[in-house]
Image (cartoon, chains in turn blue, green):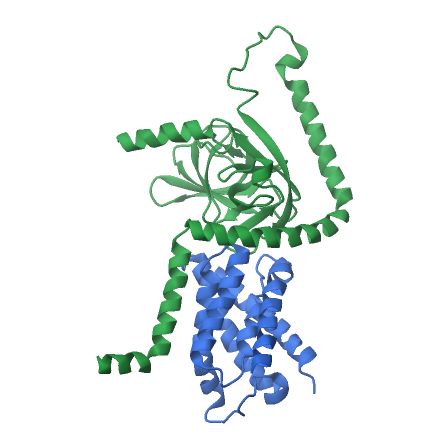
Length: 168
Length: 276
């Protein structure tokens, strides 16, 4: 249990630093900014209590906010994403039971399942973040394009990470 | 009481969710609380030092380009000196400056972090309180305006980029002198919107847009960009799209403007407001 905790704490710090110093500096075009740090919420174990899910989502967003001077924006979106996770899992897996102590991964549940799961949550996160940032529906389609492109970009990075670290 | 407790327990996840989202929204809407300043400033010291390491690495490869920019700026300055009346003529009377040596002084700074692809873009500079930088100072590059200093730590400061939908500055058309408000609409990082120009104003594509000097942040007449196109918008105003003169994709060195009289002007203006 303690071992798990330390592992996830390390992952938390690593993702925040990677986001701040690498992914925030990838500026292929004016439309793209991948937010790969959401990977943390995606791969918490299935049986994580929901309050831990919410609290860690909030802390994750707040840490990103503190670095990028956007206090509140990321915290809002990550909390929403953490809140939605159990519903998304139910929706795409129906009554299928997950093994206790297992984590959502591409190796364990297949790439189609994982991409569906990750894409849904990434879209929820990016949607709320980008529209909150724009704070209006003025330029609705412009923001929409940014959401879709950035989500796709984030998804690519997350799938790559899965292929690298969860090989069997 | 018992049933209330049961109710809370049953829906505790929803409550926790609402509370956390509430905190986020409060954080978003309150822009300047002291705690926020302390926390963000501590993080800035840390992230600033790492960013400046990477930037140092990257700048090494941009040296040639930087050289060209500096040569061009030197040339511009030489031309300006040559065109100054006192450079050739000596009949201009000497007027002692009783306020100090000039109203504006400049501080040079290296850009260590910059983004253009968000709605609220910020720039981090490697110059802070110890270098004399203070919040509310203007930041320019040799090509035009960059932004306004938002907050500082001892060695770093954060600048609200001109590409931030929250920043509005006062600008005017240099040919005709009509002034309006200049703010980004969050869409194209090369184009900024100049609004509140009355419809009887005479505008032409290519007109240059400069700072008005009405705020205490920027001196008058710094180039912002050129009119790309304009159309009538609701009311009696034009909505003018201005092509930025500064290229925000590659900003490396900037100058921070210190207006010695800013405090005096703001104080006077705020007392006038109170009297109204």
